[in-house]
Image 1 (cartoon, rainbow, N blue to C red):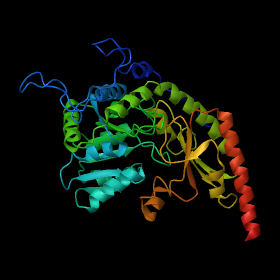
Image 2: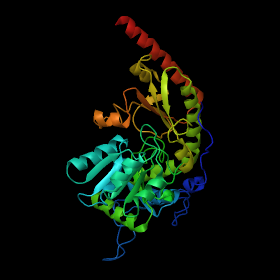
Image 3: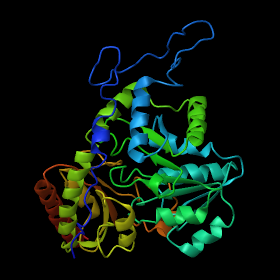
Image 4: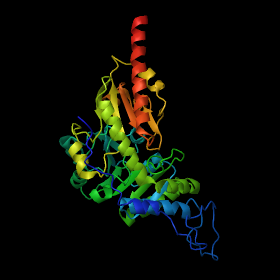
Length: 400
């Protein structure tokens, strides 16, 4: 079995990404737009503000990024926030107290922590369900939720749900939100599939260089965007101009980065599939993946995230991760550098053990964010770490 390569990265939006803000400077004709760091702006006259008056409310550098992301996602406009989690939090302000949020049982650990904490404080009702189970989803949708949170592919097991089918089932009275962080608009555009809002942690693929923390909320319609922009200003969670400037620069190489990420990922997966210390590989591009056909239908690309289980009867986990040279043990994803993560103790540590077990996140699970390094070096790195981990386990057994 090898990874399915029938999907190619959709670069139709590459020009939009590259041209983000280019030639927008009308004063001096700068090709790359300037960075506006000013916190405030003068009024034309008494009671006559200009387009911008205070950077928390609006900033030209931040607006360039927001409008570029909206174009890529085929939405009306976007609100750029200070982090991915502030983007998630912003969306909850569209609800009234006591209304119901439906979220995936295997969503990102930070999203789970936020929703569960708001539930425990009595702010909202929240139900975490397997959205791939039609019966379970139908039961909770019958309770008339206000917000349906969709995360596909899921973190970290890369489960895919049918965005179009779920959005149609939910109906017009539900605000349908898709976290598109794992793929980016180069690989998936949920607004074209029936979603009302798309959320990004721009820290990840959008920026792509692991040097900015940021988020974005893209609205399909003007009315939703206006509500989101009002609450972003009210709560003060808008992104900084400098971070927006750096993120826009990263955005311009998104399409070419994603293409290289994906090519490397296919090679890494083909290697892992044949390795005797790997029990299972989770990746939507595999024909054996339970939701492979859905991914083929709604994604332009299978992405560069994957998870696998290490056979702990044959290899030492700690030795494996500590022996890697080109895969850094760190949270986050989507940067040019390759990363490895142990979800149970890192990204999903905020989930209680029972919730992790329900989501299928065991101690043997490892998540890879495949970077754009030379793929031969990445495979050699993995191979050496597997060998050292096996040797260490034999030593442990001998000493024990």
